[in-house]
Image 1: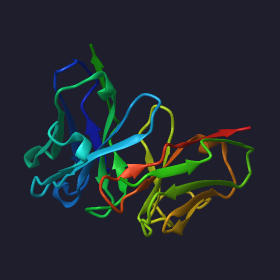
Image 2: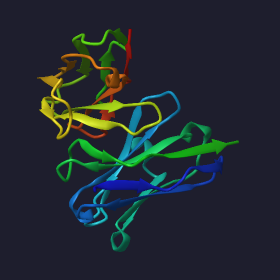
Image 3: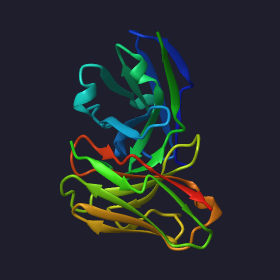
Length: 120
Length: 107
């Protein structure tokens, strides 16, 4: 079946970087954009950006530009999201999500989420 | 950025009730709106896309309507399994943005 499986929870110090992985299965990996969305404790959802697995092209929200890097490894159907210069405000659950119809659409499949805790 | 405002923030209703949640966009987004259901500790689940299209496998008691700046999610007959937080999302323009969520409880 179609699924996105993310890496496990992580704890980082302020100023460090974190890299979260998202492994896709059950569909053609290069056919659909993968988005990253985060949710701080008790808060709403925040879109961070997308990666186009076919080409590796990316687009990120202005808020995260210069601090987020999204990459992919097509040989293992996995995308990665690395966030640098972490602060306590980055403590959140990070989700990867698949685009419904390929690109610029709603998100029809989500990973289980990765809790990232940033401590000072 | 486009602001998405949901109302109400919390909603308490009885099993069998008709429930409506509203989402308003700060500028027109045509029909590029989705609704998600999120249960505690779980990832969001897509219910409705393009304002009124029902995602495959979602019960028909869920429906969406609206265009431009005003949208609604309706549950025709509330079931105990519908207890969750509901989020709207616009995907007309970057950055994609979400509403703050509506927490739905059973009376």
